[in-house]
Length: 174
Image 1 (tube, one colour):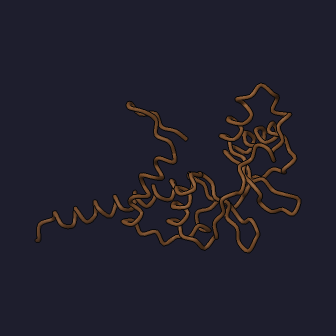
Image 2 (cartoon, rainbow, N blue to C red):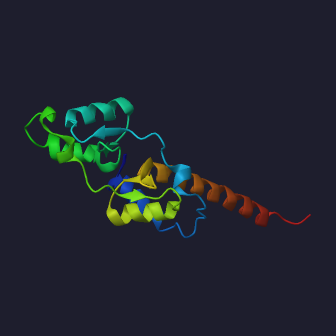
Image 3 (cartoon, one colour):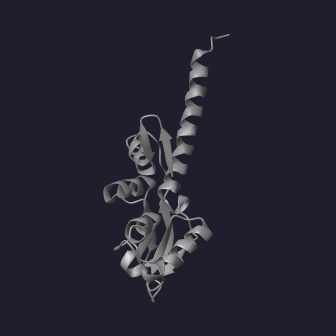
């Protein structure tokens, strides 16, 4: 997701960085488990980049969790991985195997972690996706889109509360 503005381009990660500065001002009682995406789209280590691209398009997602034979998350393949490691080369996407394209190790987080912790981890690791793992079991994924949606909701609540308070203080006593 990108937004074109007059002076440049704002990326999703920029929005997270911007909003992350204000996290201390926003009450963030929610845990990752409350805002994560539970339905995880995945792909196998031996699948092709072409299969990954097709699945991303079909499922309308920007990433797939790469699972091994034991159903453990071992990596992630993103649209960016496909562009930088496949599309920029002259070989066919059928020739690239996911194990050679994926980002690994995968960045993970516990479902009981706070949303603030997730935002900080994303920023520190420069990633837009965290796989949510509970006792070695993959239970979800949290993306920059999940965080932005949550933070926008929080900011809208803050705006509404500010308007209510401003109205309350501006009214003259009867």
